[in-house]
Structures are given as C-alpha cells and as structure tokens.
Image (cartoon, rainbow, N blue to C red; front, side, top):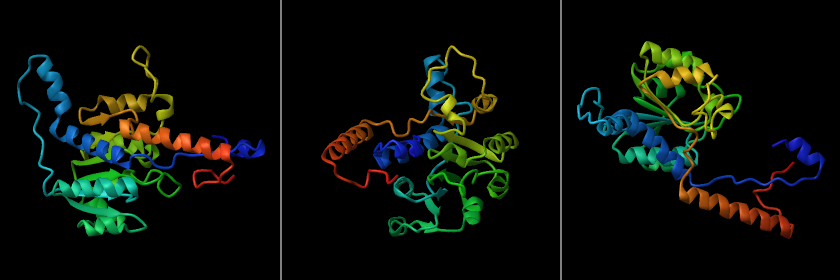
Length: 249
C-alpha cells in the first residue's frame, strides 16, 4: 500500500490489525510436532506400503527449553501452549508480558535465550532492529542440533546464514511459514514452472526443513474475523466515523 499516494489523493486506509492469534501460534506448534515426530514422512511412507520405523525417531517435548522471541499476542499464546506441553519456556522481549510470568515463563537476555533453548520460535515484528536477528553470530551461541521456527516475518532470519547452519549441523531442524523473498513465490502455483530462486530451492532440499507458504493464519475462525472487521471498517467509513483501524496518514 502506497500510503504517500493515498494521503495525496485523500484516500482513507483501514486495517485489520489482529485476527485469531491462536491460529498462528498453533501453526508454529504444528511445525514443531511435524518436524520432531516426522508425521509428514510417515504419512507418505504408509501410502507407499512402507511400514518401517527407520529414521522416524523424535524426542519428547516434555522438559525441553523453548525460547520465545517476541511476546505480543501470538508469542504469549504460543508460550502458554508450550508450557502446556510441560516445556520450560524462556522469553525475550523489550516489554515483559505478565501473562507469561503468571503461567511460569521467565524472561532472559537475548544471548541467554540463544544459549539455553532447544527450540526457538520467532514472534516479533520486523523492523530495522529485528531484521536478520537470526544470523551467523546468533547460530554460534545456539545449541548444536536445535530447532528454529519462524511464523512471523521472513527477513527476521538471514536465510544464507541459516543454510550454512543446516549444512554444518548446528541447526538440526527448521520450520518456516515465511521466507525473505516470499512475494515471488507464495500464493502461486509454480508446480509446472522452474523455480528460479536458488536459495529456497536449497532449503527445500534439506530433509530436516519444513516450509509452508504463509498459511499460519488460514483457519475458518481467522477468515471470519477478517470478514467481520473488514465489513465494520466499511460501515465506519460510510458513517464518517474515525476508528482505531483507520490509519493516520
């Protein structure tokens, strides 16, 4: 959205600021469970008549340390859900969320979170401070073989550095619903095309990488909320009412 042009031509702009944060939090958990227990691979094997258990070993989530970077609406729901799995949840955010503390989570420094976590899930906004918050220097502090999940914004992760971490074994699992260059790929059917993005082609080649195409929000409840807020925005516009959903240009 070109907000400068909208202001120049007197066009009002409304937003749908939040819808079903539970959907994205639960999708992050789905990525964790699928990567860990390899249910996607088991599904394909069984359909081909392969009932072997080779290379399907996972690990217990119970007792694992889960690091949550960003504890807004989605991050706090994710954290509480992981506490429900009997995980030790540690978090990093400039602003502490009392809900997480009340449920038994603790806040630590960014460096401590990287060092202590078995699983790290990103739920922070993208801004100049957080762009490439996960990079080669971050990976140096992490445990060998840890799991990284990103359902927030693609550029939070330096993808080239992430590939190197996968190749070295520093990163044992990667689950992403977002990607740095996703605008050229996501929401399109490229099954009959040559994918020209060599970076995502390399990511897809790893057996311990799970990629979904920005579908974390895609639940019937979220779509219902989007529709309801959009209709209300239209009504507010027609009534000449100013609401918190109207951007101040």
